[in-house]
Image 1 (cartoon, rainbow, N blue to C red):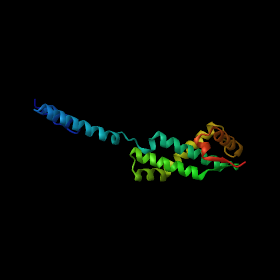
Image 2 (cartoon, rainbow, N blue to C red; image 1 turned 135 degrees about the horizontal axis):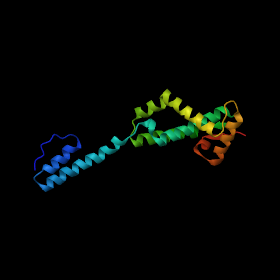
Image 3 (cartoon, rainbow, N blue to C red; image 1 turned 135 degrees about the vertical axis):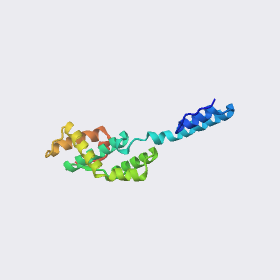
Image 4 (cartoon, one colour; image 1 turned 120 degrees about the vertical axis):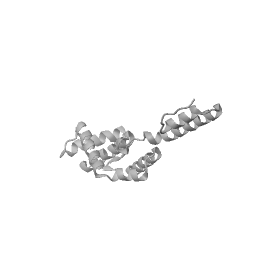
Amino acid sequence: MRLSTARHGIAKGFAAALAAENPLEAAMKLMLTLAIALIAAPALALEPINQDKHINHTLLQGFIADRINDNCDSISARKLRALSELNALRSYALEKGYTTAEVKAFVTSKAEKARGKAEAAEWLKTKGAVEGDPASFCRIGVEEIAKDSLIGQLLRSDG
């Protein structure tokens, strides 16, 4: 059996396996092609870093905690805890396959920071925070600390 149509990519491996005269050779070529496809699959499936749900959710929690810290005098940021979370998030991103350059570009992007701050402001608004009303931010902060959410873990009540 001879396949004469032009092939590209992984299809070449399958075509070569199907065209082999020796069944053992065909099986080996097919297994090699499948192995290469499986190795390449994670790299092909990696979404843009700014669309990773875990990364975005964790950063959003940090932006929210920062906003509460800025607007409530009786609550302060747990900076070492925040640094620990950022390091864990960096490790997560690198283990997932993002490069150091991608991670750095993402966290230093002014556009991404503005997006994160806007999402945090919207989240806080849905929870009842009102600009110029520190008590509304304090109430949310106290609730998050009591729930032991990530937002709450990034904050400390000073009162």
